[in-house]
Image 1: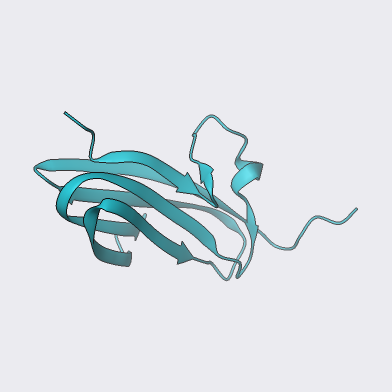
Image 2: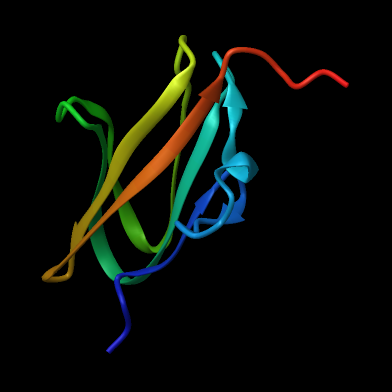
Length: 107
């Protein structure tokens, strides 16, 4: 049986919680691109929420396909967003850390 979600990417790189978070960092008001590569067939509901439960984005995607959403934050700090994917009798959830810098590195 195939998994519902083949791969999750942030800023076009495979998301790995053990990778240095600097790889995924963006400045305030710059977009983070969150993607989920979906397996199977039929309608799949994809939801991106913040820690308060506020829905940042909700889409229904026909699998096999890719869910893509870009999100930005106006202030610096670390954010946790949760990607929820439901379809074909399966549920998938992943917490993703997004670090927002005040300004770009100089030097």
